[in-house]
Length: 121
Image 1 (cartoon, helix red, strand yellow):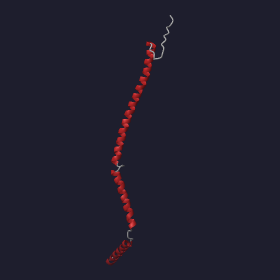
Image 2 (tube, rainbow, N blue to C red):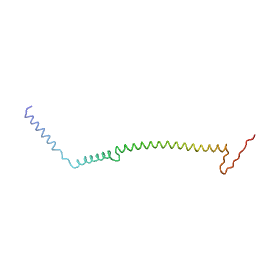
Image 3 (tube, rainbow, N blue to C red):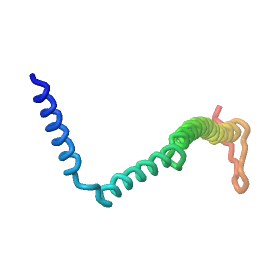
Image 4 (spheres, helix red, strand yellow):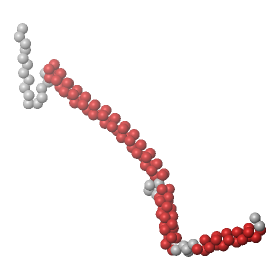
């Protein structure tokens, strides 16, 4: 290819590129504001995620507190079941003791009259 043709192609390419860049409309204020607002919202969300009430550290602490509370609840539930069984045993036990005392020892409550019937011989 002759040198003149190469120079002509380079000039044509440069002219086309200059026209393409100069033909682009200038950025308006609204096209600059939208990305800026989106960037600010992204920064706000990121700040909240790292340091706010819903941050990763806060959520981790809350999960740990929930696990500790569940363990305490399980322990209290077990203790309540044990105490309930003990109360039930004491109630039933007192009934048994009272029945034994009445039948074998002749125990009477206030305002009761004890009548012992002797078996025939």
